[in-house]
Length: 494
Ligand code: D5M
Ligand code: FE
Ligand code: ZN
Image 1 (cartoon, protein in one colour):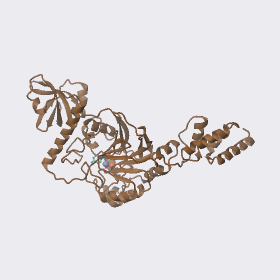
Image 2 (cartoon, helix red, strand yellow; image 1 turned 180 degrees about the vertical axis):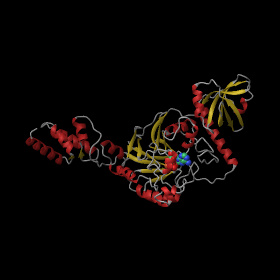
Image 3 (spheres, helix red, strand yellow; image 1 turned 90 degrees about the horizontal axis):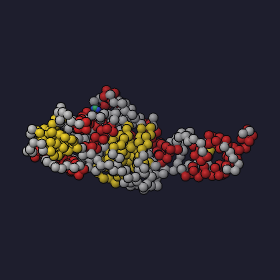
Image 4 (cartoon, protein in one colour; image 1 turned 90 degrees about the vertical axis):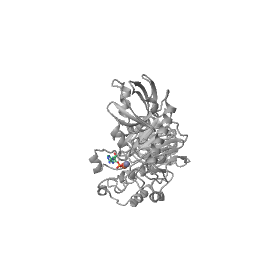
């Protein structure tokens, strides 16, 4: 196009854009000039105006132009687009399905016995409803069966030895041998068995000894993800560790600004504007005295001030976004799981500035009918120690194991402090749609039998303590789950 003509075309386009109250960015303008056609340019500009206004903006990017007049789509655009938050006008739909209260506990043996009996009874019912357990024999009856009998039983794993298991139920303990020539499936299941887990065992009797034919995990049924009617999303995060020198405040603020203003790409703007909920799966602050010499790594050495500082940051989250928090092992709450919600005096500090609901670790909430099991994940350390496949850098494998055993912390008496008193609230009795954990500081997304698994990483850079432990965190990433279609976007704020 001749320069003279080009200027005239530019002027025409810009006059029309002004009339339509839209702004064209330079790249968008140059495409429109290049593809200018006297007969169609009014229609095209009208379409552009409609398109950007639909998204609550007035700025036309080259991406929008290409989406209207063709050409390959690019994801990056050069300017931030301010928009109307799409989630703002959608009514909140939260149901708290389970959140544990603080309990007065004493360390008495009877309460612990009740706890394991409750675990056994709950998981036994799950097994009997999910798998064919007939002919069924309680453990005690298995020792009176004649040679070559076969049957099924339910037992808690007391110990795993080279070629046998010691198993128990509420009134009997016995050995069950693993045949040397057993099949791969049994070998694999034995390698996953965790102490104190409850499983079904298919057995046969030979020379008055009990032999294992197969092991039946309680497991979860396959059920389809039922999407919400409303097109809203949930941002999943954890392990903020406010107060730690290694807390990435800049990245965290970038995330909050993104919630307020949207991002650099159209897609990110849309994702951010649909967020109606944030779930924080524990370790909101770094706490004080959580591990040896931690004070050397703290920038805020007072727990109250840590919650106040975080509260100030969260006050900038748009007010139409609801924030659900649970405690982790660094928070102001009793250490043993299930942890009741963060102590009131600290939770109140958070609530002063934000739209916050404080629940227990673990807890179960439904958002627009989608069920979230939220758990900090301290027991992943034990699962990584005892089970094949599970490791700190693959938290989704440990999550899968928790679902297979229908228990969030099967191993008792190792590193995870468990409140073994009365009812066992750590049994996964209700199957979630989404299972959200944190703790290991590694962002991973996975799926198990249609259940979405998210370990939401951290906002803390690698600490000296983690260097000693050989842990490599992946900070400053969040997962955004659309309740409307179940898709998960991974967004980085580095
Ligand atoms: O946990 C941060 C990371 O450190 C996470 O990967 C677990 C790991 N961790 C924490 N404490 C221990 C101990 N005692 N041994 C091994 N690994 C550990 P956080 O809860 O944020 O401190
Ligand atoms: Fe943490
Ligand atoms: Zn933790």
